[in-house]
Figure (cartoon, each protein chain N blue to C red):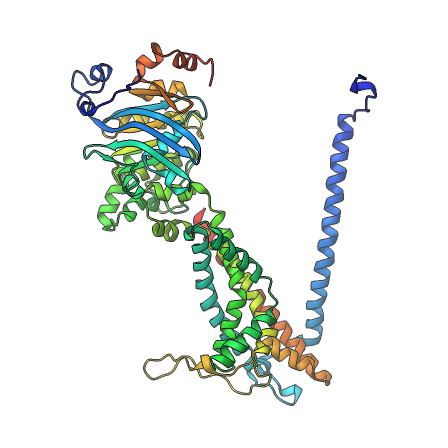
Amino acid sequence: MKPLAAQPSRRLSDAEIVARAHRSDRNFAILGLSVLVISMIVLLSLIVDFMVDGLGRIDLDFLTSFPSRRASEAGILSAWVGTTLVMLVTTALAVPLGVAAGLYLEEYAPRNWITHLIEINVTNLAGVPSIIYGLLALGLFVQSLAMGQTILVAGITLALLILPIIIVATREAVRSIPLEIREGAYALGADKWQTVSGYILPTARPGILTGAIVGMSRAIGETAPIITIGALTFIAFLPPSPVQDTFPFINFNWLNSPFTVMPIQMFNWVSRPQAAFHVNAAATGLILLLMTLLMNAIAIWLRYKIRRSMR
Amino acid sequence: MLQPGLSENEMTAVTPALDAVASKEPAPLRASVRNLNFFYGDNQALKGVELPIVEGKVTALIGPSGCGKSTLLRCFNRMHDLYPGNRYQGEIILYPEGINIVAPEVDPMLARLRIGMVFQKPNPFPKSVYENVASGLHIRGIRNRSEVDGRVEAALRQAALWDEVKDRLQESAYGLSGGQQQRLCIARTLAPDPELILLDEPTSALDPIATAKIEELMDELRGAYTIVIVTHNMQQAARISDFTAFMHLGHMVEYDVASLIFTNPTEERTRSYITGRFG
């Protein structure tokens, strides 16, 4: 048999190997940087465009006025109050439910085909188009249960929409906790609930928080499901105040109030022919962006604080 | 020497060798492993293991990687129950009650509430130094502030860590060095006052100075606590253990007074291992 070394390949010198490594590092860095720059330019131009069109329109009157037939007098009071209240309901429902479901699936559920089926479906639900959730809410909450087109229904709908995101994030966060923490707690004699609530959940907080914010950022911009359940596009009043000066000082009537939200207000104005309303839409978009950024900023700050307290 | 026929009289006297160590007194047992088989699924990792654990003494488990020494250690506090498909067969009797802690009807928590464990890698919780040591007490429902304070301090003193951390009790445990973290884990294990302490290669992730401190510490705990330690370091086993058990391929090959195992082992396999011919 012919020896394999019959045709010796030329061996690269060490210097050539190093040069090749540097070259491929640089090539990838350039590729990555250009992709990054392109996407940042697109995003920035969007924000700049909003600012050029809308920044001049934003003042206190804009934030404290109801929508109006006259573009110059119109404001977004009912929209931002509506968005805030809907997000409140969504968060209050989706975060506890999602975290509990994620913990259950990861820590308590028996490893069998039913659990597996549920897990696959939860992951798939995260990818279901939001309008489907809108249709579900329209059929179930608005029509069958006759709950009306209210803040509560919108909050529940958006909570359903982001529930899979929070469940998946919780599971990932819980799964990434080092085995040593878990075993350490059990070895001290902790029962399952003590281990989960005292050691696993606190350690998983930053990851869960990230998931919750990703979900909420998605919910705050959703338009389709809210329109589907029949939110009004023109609201010239506020929901009843959640606080009152007579006992018991808080009330939940606002849950059953009709409402509008920022993206709907924006959509409404964009679809008007008059250019002045387009300026209003740009201003609304800018404020919606700011609200999302603010939410993310709070999350980053919280996560930083939690991580630092654990280091 | 291996004790194939450990019987009911082992409570009072185990072997002549043990009697010698215990200065003619019969050696009281803290625990006793009897014909223990352990299975990871279909894979049998322990085969008919017999081992007495003498009260107040340090028992070292040595043997080459994969011999089953860590598996045996983790049977004592039922750590294997955390993962599905594991099965025990046989007995680990915990004295003085004589309960079999690997019996299926015994809840794993019962074993873990009485038997503490220190792991290979220091595993402090992402909490303060104080909360780490108080963890075992809180888990047991001990919340009385002054009692917890007292026991945390006592445990930290026993673990020779008090002087180093007394001014930073509320700081995160992650700020401590690796050796300090491991002593913190020992303090955490000591605080609930366990009847038996398991150490799974506690110094393998530490530098020689931190290792020396831990070994010193074990020497001080001897007598007050019963300790079982797994180590891959034979010098360490020789330095700190009263009794040494050599395991190979899931079998308990030989168990004896440490000085005898390291100077005059009965079994050829033990001799080969401690002289470095395999492992």
